[in-house]
Image 1 (cartoon, rainbow, N blue to C red):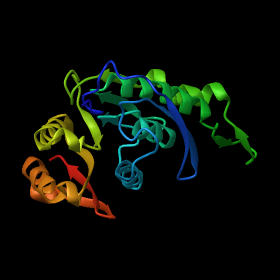
Image 2: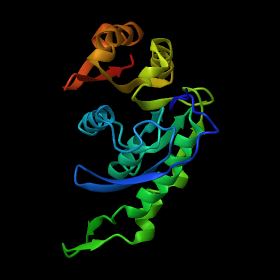
Image 3: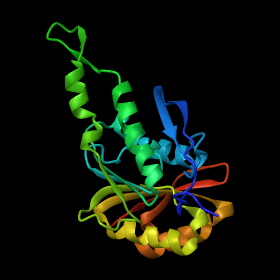
Length: 231
């Protein structure tokens, strides 16, 4: 049976779309059959995103990798809030990556122009072209890849909602690859349920990053968002 991390190319395409309100911003997403959580934003990803956005040390203008990006909710949300990011997104699933590319376009077009203050203290809207130049899918690198394979650069932050059903060996390999692909001082965000091995995952992260470098950034309903800081 095909899984979202190992899709069947013969699977019939069945697109869906839905709208999402996230921290006062409106998004619209399209998904396809054979992708993870295709009818909604899953709780773990939402919790990880909320925690990352609330981290005062998140690199708002840095190089960020959305690893195992699926249909792109993490990347789309990050770009809305931090339009000066240098963003990379990758996934092993070609259908998911195609949906992510389309969702970047949809949500870039839906971004509202920001306001700036005039010399007289009044506000005026930034011209649409100026805003779009900061937030455009053309600036995002998308790559069909298993893990960090193929990336020849290192990142200030990496976010990963790991493919738990792929098994512990795959998940821990992705942890190790993320650790290797960070700059010194880089930040790795990941989320996992306690029922799906959060305690053992933390031990593995502590082995990779060091015990003092791993912390619970958020916990809710059995989910743990771990923040790992590279020495």
